[in-house]
Image (cartoon, rainbow, N blue to C red; front, side):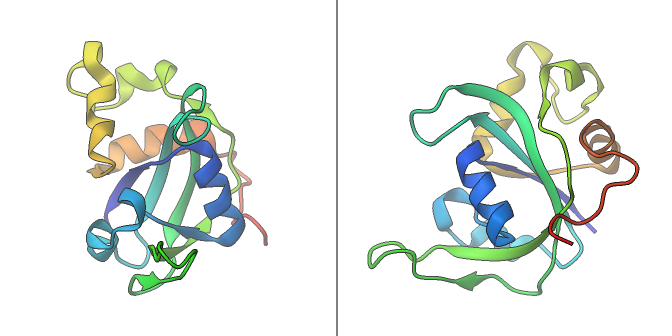
Length: 145
């Protein structure tokens, strides 16, 4: 299994949690095709809303890929994003700043936000556990079940 971070505004994360899906890089399929069933995805939200939301800088959702291939949907005639189904865990929105020293994927702590400019990227098991343990209670279950 691979662990991922997907950088998405909180309003878009909330839509995904309600619909049990994720999109990446404004609906493009490339990174979604790299994901496999069972992979973990942590959602980091730099802002509350896209494009003009307030700064947030928090992890806002976590879940596992629940299908085998990306699929395309029509949201509007001019927007047909690619998606993956996700089983989300119940979790608490978690500010990133208290976790910075423990996150190994952030190599330059002074410029910690740089990595998130890539949108979707891999993280190791250690970093997943740091984030998951901060977000999820021991009795958490899949959201909506």
